[in-house]
Image (cartoon, rainbow, N blue to C red; front, side):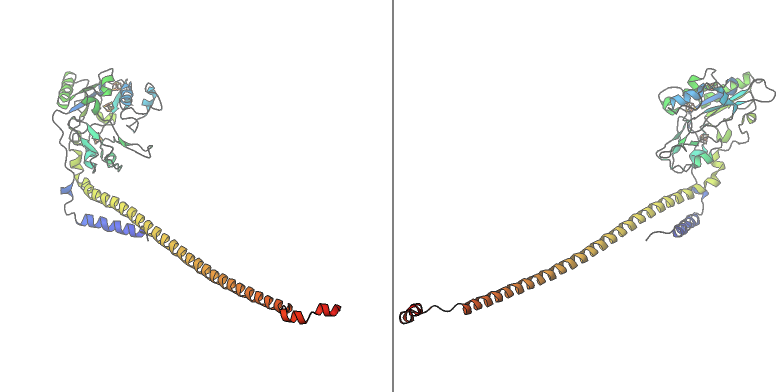
Length: 372
Ligand code: SF4
Ligand code: SF4
Ligand code: SF4
């Protein structure tokens, strides 16, 4: 006896209804916001210095032991298309040919390591977390593959290993956390030949950025992108072209993503509960199927044993009958033989005369008399 599809969906609907009905203040129960850590590290990307050499992409590929790309990193023709990070590339450089400019502008794109990350807030199993170094860290062992982080990220950064059917992971720039912890620079920062990338504490980077903008006001737009966007990021940018022309939204505002999405994310605890209900449901169905399978197996075994027992009983009964019949036949045969033997003996007795007594032999000698 299994659970029908109709029963299952009816059961799930009831579960969802009860979860929502018994949650009077879903918003109050939503995930708490991160506030960023003092002294955390980050990177300043000076877009005006970037030459689009893609060496940062190559270094990122190497330090993260990613698969080789379809086209080599020194093939700059890939810059003709706008790209975004993907499962095998945690960072990409895009080229922008802007009207009225002789030279193109290049922008490196990767996770911005938000101070109050929407992805962290959206992740109900805490597979993503903001660390004290500034990096937003991913723990694949906790990830359930729901990909809410991908939906939540205002910068469209996290990717998913769709080509990995067995152990797919969410992928993104790690801020080279393992290298930072060893006292090394992030791979992309270390390799950049134009010092378009600067690593340091977030506070230091903001100071450097302000200083450059103040010293060269004609060169830079007066905006440190990431200082305040979405509550601030650990990866920031200064540019010689308006950010809006470089595919970087300037209308994101300064409100952290979790605060903006708290209404929507208020559903996350419900989703968490539902997820648990769903997982439990799958588990229950699975257990039920196992139970049903075990019951069916037991019934089948019992039935087989019963059938076999009946067959055995019949066979024994038949054997008994046969033995009885054989025994009776044997007795009959023996009786018949005994009777036949007795009859034979009687016949022989009648055929052979009894021997003469000695007296009569003396008086009567038939042979002799006949010859005399
Ligand atoms: S290595 Fe530096 S200059 Fe080259 S593309 Fe990357 S950020 Fe730009
Ligand atoms: S840029 Fe996106 S993936 Fe990176 S920390 Fe911010 S929300 Fe998360
Ligand atoms: S910080 Fe590390 S993981 Fe992030 S883009 Fe640079 S090299 Fe790649």
